[in-house]
Length: 147
Image (cartoon, rainbow, N blue to C red; front, top):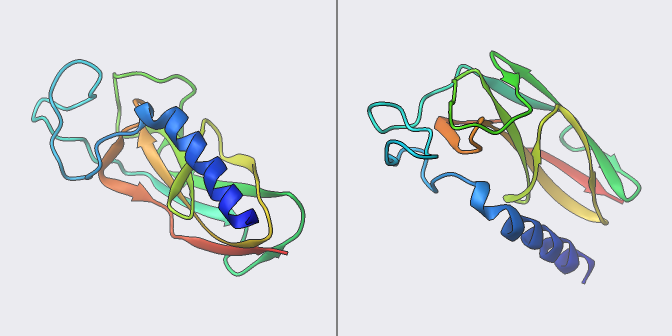
């Protein structure tokens, strides 16, 4: 039941911020102009960024009602404002728990609420318009357990 409640909360968060997500496929073209952030060719730009999760460590067991997430980002920088004037080396981080978007972060550290169970955490570096780069910039997945 607790696991169901966690997923229901995560789904509520996703539905409330769903309009910020980009196209479902990283290779699909988007229309030019407007808020799409598309390049002149109509495709999303690539990024030199590399994002990784350094905390929690994969396989780690944690206790408590939150987990501290720490990331590294190389080849790019986090920007605080959302804009359609996108650059390959500027953007935001989206955090996913069990493949559900749970946070749109403007930094590299954050505490996430958790309940007992096993989780899969991954991060994506996205453009300043919150849509993904092409190809998408994902961290390796981290598995952790909350006792």
